[in-house]
Image 1 (cartoon, helix red, strand yellow):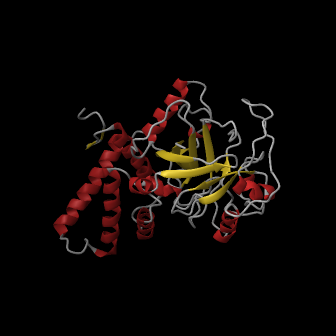
Image 2: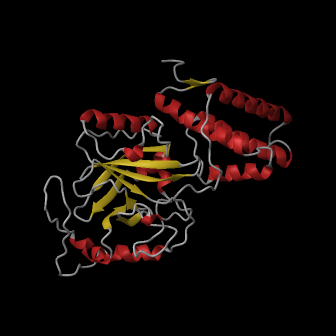
Image 3: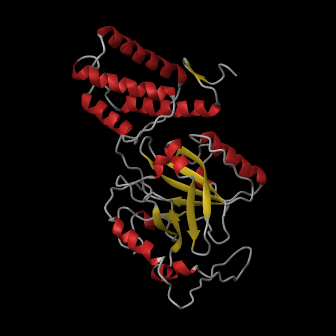
Length: 355
């Protein structure tokens, strides 16, 4: 319906495109509030963040802002871009004023955006070498000890069951009984053990060997149950600048990256699993009283309606349409890391188990 999805003079063909533009506007407005865009050093920093994809836009509004930054840099350095004339420079200035007008018309309230480089809650600087994790990965390929390793975990469906740990994870489990699985995305750095402990924050700054480590280790939400299992298993990890842990997860902001990496392998220590990516979206940690969909609270659905409602909420937030959906009874996997473009921001990838 023409004109339904509009922000200022911008029109969008779908609700998904409209929501993407609103997210871009939130980021842009936050940048304008927190930074002096008349300073060359600030402009260069923002341009660098856009180029290295620390900031990613998904709409024409975002594209126009990117051009505005580029033109402002060129103007401060000394005149219009190479090959352009003064008349064209005036057009750029008019375009900048038009963009500002559109933003004011389109947004009445904005979300405060975190300072570039700010680390929220569990975002720490990289410090651990990849070799430690590679050593762990090699262990799961080696022949396990002959001793049979089992773990008694109460199950609501089968009380007293003693599930046998998969052969390839037995030796690792003997080293650290907080191990509950392994996550891998082919052709990426994501190839790590996944932990779960009674202290939900322990693996924010400890590695598999239980040593202090700013990189932390991937870990599952305390309320999730990998044995039963929960309808949705949520795995958290740091967004490290080095690319370790979930430092490369934000590449899923780009649909082309998703198309190259549509599958995720997540084994629990009891069974193997392959998942198909459904959604990739930006979110944040909300205040307790805010009434909105909070992905980090969706672990089990009590009904078909509750499950479907969560799926629709995530579909609405998703940066692109994968065409993959899920029904009540399907098992979901959620990967969550911090996002630097917003205070308490999070970037989330959700997948459905297919085998």
